[in-house]
Length: 395
Image 1 (tube, rainbow, N blue to C red):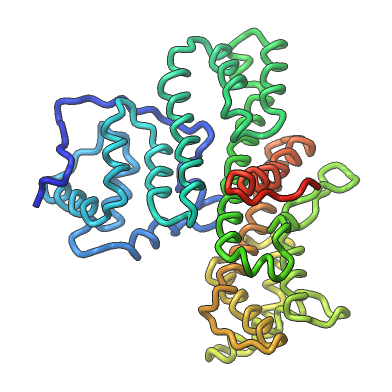
Image 2 (image 1 turned 90 degrees about the vertical axis):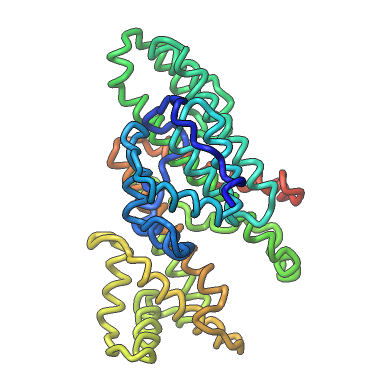
């Protein structure tokens, strides 16, 4: 029956706004995480007979609305897809009810409509932030007038403090006080640095909510093991050293953590110990025992000179570490153990943080501003715990 489907009103024009403010397009987010095919894989995992192919859907969705012509057969497939995912119906209703289309709003709303968070309060919180951004982008900024007025509005918005990097409002207001020309303001490095810092801060804040949400699922086990007051993943954030642009290596820190989980000898480097575990794990799966290759790969990951770790290799290493960590504790684990996902997430988080720090450094952001970006994680972690009713003790 078609009665549950929303009608498409061809006579109504919807304004489309380009770009992003705080919430990046999801394709950009996955590229930053070095998972460019993640959207495709997630789509194909959920795909049912009669849906659009990913190639058709992605091409259609990535175009501006003026180019979104679809054949009747394609439109029918799109409607069947929406009907087969009841959780997406409110997202469609919301998008069609608005008179301005803001792509990041639609994408993030769709992601939040799934089972991303276990606690409804998390979804509610982030939906409210999305709505606030839509109001700012689609209602307030367009009528602000000059660039100076828009930057001032941005600096004084609640989102600047809720989502952005600490210090951004003060930097923007100081910039406005010393720069009168709109062209000079648009080209000023401070404005560009603030925009980069704000967008990365949103990702770290969102990651903090994901980690808190996941940790509270096993709250009783955390409390039983004495981890209820731990700020998980904080140890994998980059830390600036005593010399300018001298940063810790979160990926190296993560591999050291893995080695400790496996109780590797203290006189053996993490790359040597984990490379051996990884090579043996692959050997038991029918591959050639190539110890030197795996150890070299881990050293390359730490140096970052030969590209970023592939997701399949990250998961393979996580499986090897999970099996070894379980064995030293007398536990039987499998390649599908939940610990595998946790370890893979740790390594992805650490490597992405290292990548983001390096990219911000290359873009010219000062160390202090980059440090403020990464401080958002702990700040948001505490906020999430507070709003979910299990606050962390004051440090």
